[in-house]
Amino acid sequence: MHEDGNDDGHRDASLAGTGVDQTAFLALERELTVLLRRARANQGEMAREVHPDLEPSAYGLLVRLDEYGKQRATELAAYIGVGKATMSRQLRALEDLGLIDREPDPADGRAWLVALTQEGQDRVRRVREARRARYAGRLADWDTREVTELARLLHQLNRGMEK
Image (cartoon, rainbow, N blue to C red):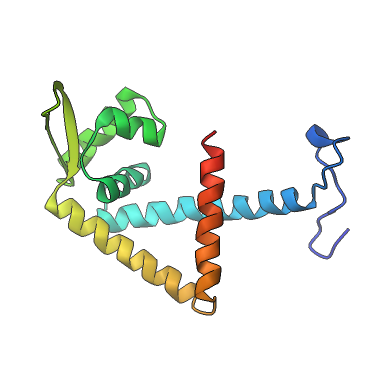
């Protein structure tokens, strides 16, 4: 048993007998749990910074629209991993707040494209810039190569989780 209270010799039952050393995976699980908990809390803070009435879960939609521009509601629902009804409700709320607009899709008259309004763009970008500044401040003692490597590894992890 180590000072941090973790028994690094412990093996997860699902991988017992495989010969895989679980130390690294236990540490990964522990650190991801902390990271995800903080990310959820930060998402709520960032949503409120965009608009006091914005649901935390809608923040990711706004960021997606900021990065990729106009998209169909079905594309957004697939990206976020929610159903059509949930997406429709979230988009109505964003529209009511003046953060998004919908327009007919010229490629398919039955579909709609969703885009940030100018107000939505301004608010989202202001919050994202402030967040990047916070990251830069908290990681000021990191070498730029380390930040780049962390981003690369997180990207690799995210891609692996899509499978």
